[in-house]
Image 1: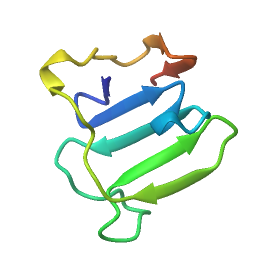
Image 2: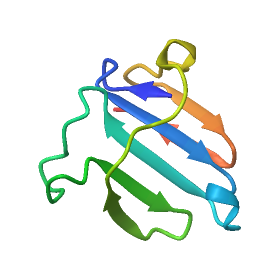
Image 3: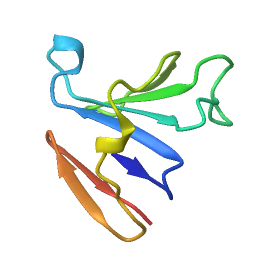
Length: 85
């Protein structure tokens, strides 16, 4: 999905890398790191139980096929609910 006017792209997984746990992986569409992430770690991973950490990489797949979630909208996929403000 893409949120925040397309600036953030996320992958919502019910079984992240076949490891048996859900995760949401998000990154800036520019490829740059988040302000709080240590360089060069440009993706944030949030596991289903709330653990948060940073990794380096890219969100796979063609962004042209992403669902776009605008301000005030809610999107559900793979057991995740995304609410934008």
